[in-house]
Each structure stands twice: as structure tokens, then as C-alpha cells.
Length: 345
Ligand code: PHE
Image (cartoon, rainbow, N blue to C red; front, side, top):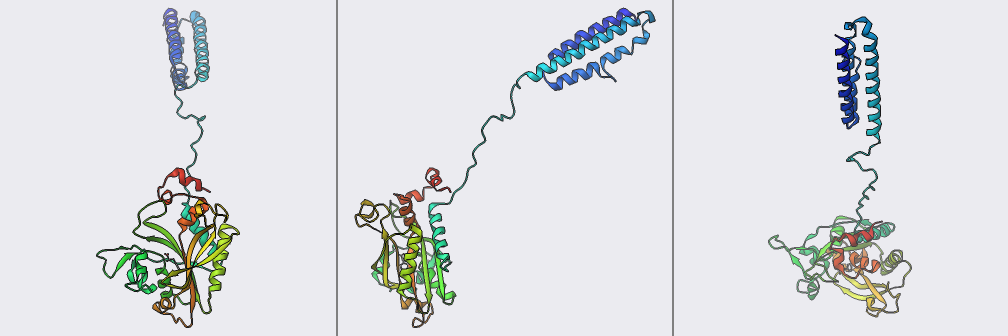
């Protein structure tokens, strides 16, 4: 190869290389250009250097100097381009690390569930265990065994949803009291149970009624259990649940308890002086209770001469409304997150 051709090829390689480097837009492209131009094994400059021996000896010095100059130019251009590309902000960042993390979305227990669990906890300390029974119940357990005579007007107290076609007087239980009978049939006294669960009534869905709602039944049966135990236990419960609070028992009527009593606690809003929430009475009713009627014990197969017991039933939705001052029962069924998230703990 003549020196003239050699120098011309070297010039072309330099021009070409500088242009390629200037156009390289990423570290990958710069590395590829470096490899193509300067790689020791197969780079274009190495290829040209291999031609050196074919240059007449006297002219080889010039040729070598040119090769070195081109090499330095290209290496410097590559380094400069690397700095330029590195200093540039990435065009479209794949991951924006400056963005705040999305807050974790925590589920929460429903206020009625919170109330049920708290009540279960208080009674658990007194030796009560949780019992359950079916929501689709037989008429006998819901009414008959609980001393409702077939023609008794008390049966109208519950507007019942009967299950057509299920036969044998099947219905959706109107209260949790049938769990009393089922437990008395399957367990020997002493018995202390708490039975939370849903019940159904043919009520319009308004601010204070729902066609399905939760109840909590409680029952204690043994030899020598008296009304004093009922009063002491339920008063203790009210003080644990609401804080020290005046309570009172009022005579009431249920077919399955005798005597029967409704329990009130002093109004949570006015403290007892009377306000619209308690309709001026100063009291709020929280549960129905009484000594289990001997006929109920006998219907379940127990000797009512030997055993006595007491029972109560309360509505945890009502209790939740009193405690959290919820004005409309429908809020408990809406599943509106803005309402429910107030109960996250
Ligand atoms: N079952 C009654 C009701 O639904 C409540 C109750 C339970 C009363 C146990 C006395 C004893 O209203």
C-alpha cells in the first residue's frame, strides 16, 4: 500500500469515526462505536495498522504517527461523548423514584362486629362460651319450645318470614332465643353461653329498623341460679361496656321468661337529664331479659324443679348506634367506606 492511500484511508476512518461517535446517543451506542473503531482484535484502526508493513520503510514513521493521532482523536471523542451522554437527563425515566408511595389500604372491622367481639370478650371473662344455631330454623325452636302458644298474640310481636316449601314450619329465625333450646338439648348444665347471630323480621327498612339484624343471646343455667345472678351479671356488663353508668331494670313480658325485665342504661348523650335522643326519659333500653320459663326448660328436656336459669337478648347494632352516636341504622348496611373507615383501629 502506498503512503498516500494509507493516509487517505486513515483520514476517512477518522472522519467517519468522529461522525459515528457524535451520533451515538446512549452508552450502548458509544461502546459499540468504540468496539467497531478501536477494538484490538478486529477494530477498523487495527485493520489499518496491519497494513503498516506494506508501506515503504522510509515512509512508515509518518504512517505510524498518523495512526497514533487518529487513535487519540477517536479515544478522546469517545470519552467526551460518554461524559455528554452521562450528564444528560434521561429522556423518559422508566421509574420515577420521586413519586410518593401509594398508601396501603387497610380493611377494618364493621362497627357491629367490633361491638359483638367486645361483648363476647366481657362475657368470656365470666365463663361464657360462644354458641351458634341455624338462621333457617324450625317453627318449634323459634316459637313452640319457647312457650309461645300457637294462637298467642305474642306471635304477632314478630312479623315472621316463613320459608315456603321447606315443610315442617321452617322460617328465618326472628330472634336468637332458639339457640337457648338447642344448647339445652345438647349440653348438660352448668351452661353459660353467648350466641351472636343474624335474625330476620318483616320490617320496613327505615332509620331504626332493618329486616335483618344481629342479636346476641346470653343464657346461664344451673342449680340455684337466681334473678340476683341475672342482675349482677348484666349490671357488671353494662359498667364494663359503657363505663360506670347508672342502670335500671323495668318489668317486661316475654313468653319464654318469667319474670321478664328490660334493662336501661342512663342516656349516653345527656347523662340522664333528658334529651331528644332518649325522648326526655334519661334512659336508653339496651336489652330484654328474664328468668327462663320452666316450660322452656321442660321442652328442652330439663328438670325445671332442679335447674333454673336466666337469659337475655340484645341488638349489637342498637348498642353500636348508642356508643358511636350513629343516627340511622341504614348507615350500618351501606358499606360506604367514608363511614366505615372511621372505625379503623
Ligand atoms: N328474644 C327476645 C327478643 O328478640 C329477647 C330476649 C332474649 C328476652 C332472652 C328475654 C330473654 O326481643
